[in-house]
Length: 555
Image (cartoon, rainbow, N blue to C red; front, side, top):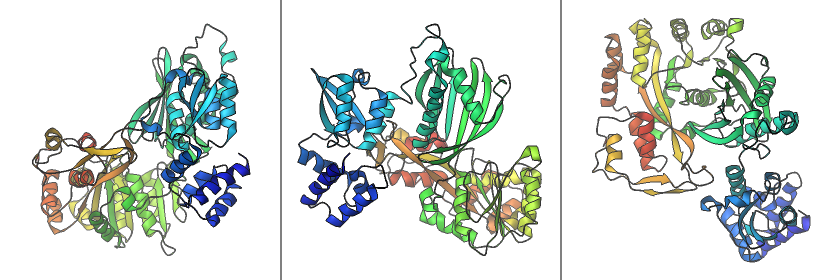
């Protein structure tokens, strides 16, 4: 778009008293080095809100403004405008009246998108204003990953090489990786079926269908991913593991790739490790002020073991990284052994498990003790050897962090006892065990009040007569109509004290330790989750789906 058009938008905003001249000048200067539209930059810099900008633009230009979140798109029109044009110009056809298409655009003063659609369709164009992000999300919803793959294509129509050349396969794979990164997915599942290929992303802990790809494209798709991850292309009968380092527009992504032979071909799963992601604070993770204060007290000691427990995918490693980020100082030597390294931390000495080279958690821990560490982080305690070395490290004046797979905090002590660790060693070294799960956050773009049912309260262990205001997500483009976007941790922290120590020394079962901890004031994961329900962060449904039902009544 020409600079005169940028200035026209800026002048409209100045005349309306929404921004100052110096704010416009700053935004125009920033735009010289960026591809973003002027309005996006002004919104990003806080000069004007998104709502104010688009409402003013709509009023001044006499062009309707529409929220695509809850607008039902005429799917027949999707075929009139190619995905290439839609993505390039950030446009979306909405409806057609006679020979005129109403077209959602983010910049109605730019003639290029309107001209491109007019040339492609041969129809008149009536622009309607919508936000760029809404249009992009709607394009993803209606066009899928890539439009060049047509699920109706049959292998007997023509030679597969004529339909899908190498460049298009590369484009498809890059499109899959870019889209998964955009939606902050943790895993990509590519599954061969009898008649098609199913593509799914795990977003906020839940698998979501994204697109069906033609069956004929599968061999080329698998080969491309195997080449990128340094796997054996010819081997299809046994599982393989590989790694891809991919640079997307949203940052560098480290992908761990796994293949698994199935009935209709190899299933591929790619785990995304976003090494450039910002490490979150305890508050951002979901720690309440009370739990954060108790946990911070444990960090003040110069020695001991602190464990984080939970199943796979519960955010244990993320919590450990946030903890190390708090402890990282020039006078502290932090050494880690991980599998894999999920975050690249400055000023932290990180190493990775390599079983082929004989580097395990236990063997690496032995070496770490000779590296003059102050703080040690062991990615996971998996066996008796590792826990014994961790205890030895704690006894010799080191602060040790690790993870353990247990259902709750109290069960962590039971697991240590089952490894034949002497009870007095546990009470002497373990400072506390933090257990957590991840629940989905309600989407802030479509949150609305919700009347909680008696059944939901009973499932969560709450007296039905309790007055709790609930919320839910209506479903919109931002959350792909799920009602959820992002996750937050529900946490319980069991701190070692005299009563807990006595129970461990007497080999008390886990449920007794848990009951005693609760009577001593421990906030359980369910109680923490109920607080987050009250605050409008999550729903009862998500809470009991994640934690299960309980048989006690909460206040």
